[in-house]
Image (cartoon, rainbow, N blue to C red; front, side):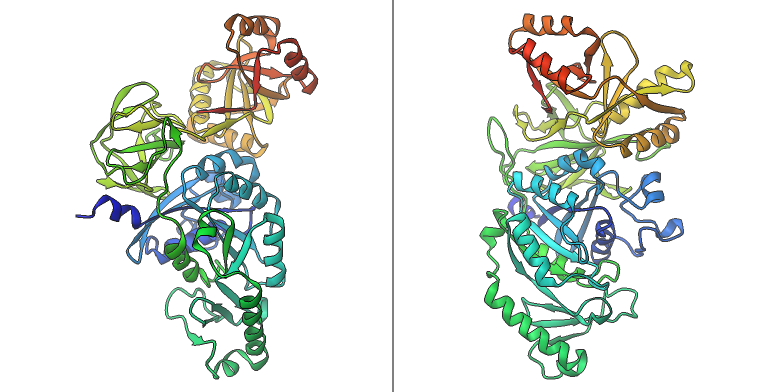
Length: 526
């Protein structure tokens, strides 16, 4: 029987982050292929239901070829268990991505070889930096024309203030791509442009082998040897300590579409990415090798199976050996919760988990009992920290085509708000519900899901408010005075917390000046 420390050492829990269209979801598929988790992978926009991306399960994701919801996939490779979280690339869903990053121990940052670091990549990197998260970089699409690899390395170093050390290096690029050199083994992995993928039987030749000149061409071989010499003279050697502290990134080059350079990336994650790490909590830090089970909910997904109107809470296990049927304490309510049907995921596919270990992500079916930020333990009163909600940047009133279905609409809005992608505010003066989101695309997703999953036709129209702030005050009387003076701007969120809806920046600043004892907060920790 595997001991707890052994099980912890065999786990790698990581997220993939990138700007939209850098190839993140395609890379996810190919990592699953190496793990034997799926037998067929196709381009995200390929035709036919069988060739849809396995990690994008929502209809709107399949239609647009983008990820708008974090997906969880567990697979095994070379004796290790990998928990891979594919995050939304679109900036309108950055809040879901932020919370997902609280549940992983490292991240793979995917860059387009032609575009380098893009806006959303930088934003997501900053989130990782807040948590000192180790980052592995994968430069994708080297089978297309791209920028000089040294330019890309310099950009990473200067823009992100990271030390850079290449683990693989491209031999040419685009039409001239001959392969990648694995710098840890001094082996050139050869690229065949005619192959659909490079999953098995990949040809290799040593960097020092005289035959390399004939295989890739004398000019390419000479340039490669010069570049490798320059890399070893100019780049720092890989430091496990610097990587684990989030100050150095190992860089891999490849093509997710051609499954080329992906094996080397996966091996690099296996060898260098951290095993499950300790997690911040109050009143103490939780270590993964502790005997008692603890974990936190970082995501809730409604209607993964539309036939059963299900609701699944995604729990990151932080310590202990979890077994199916365990009774755990739901810290927020103080009530016991028996977990009879925990699930492991391959995107939308799922299987019962008889046991799970720190670093694993399990799904717990429930009917609204579990919320984002909830902590489960074997009895101790703990709360994991750092899982926030953000004030929405766009506020809209809900418009329902059939007023007789107001109750069903409320259920739909509350269900979807539980996922944390949108927020619902009920004005205290009894006026129409206000929905808040971070980005405009979220309204399109909400409209599509309300129709597809609840059979309701609804839309969103302009609201007289520009932003929202949670309000707190140690003096309840002062808070009540502020609420009374701003009655038409006050609302409650779905947890009953008081919210000030500001018509513009001037109104927000005026309220702050009028009531200096009240705190107006743009974030709310769960």
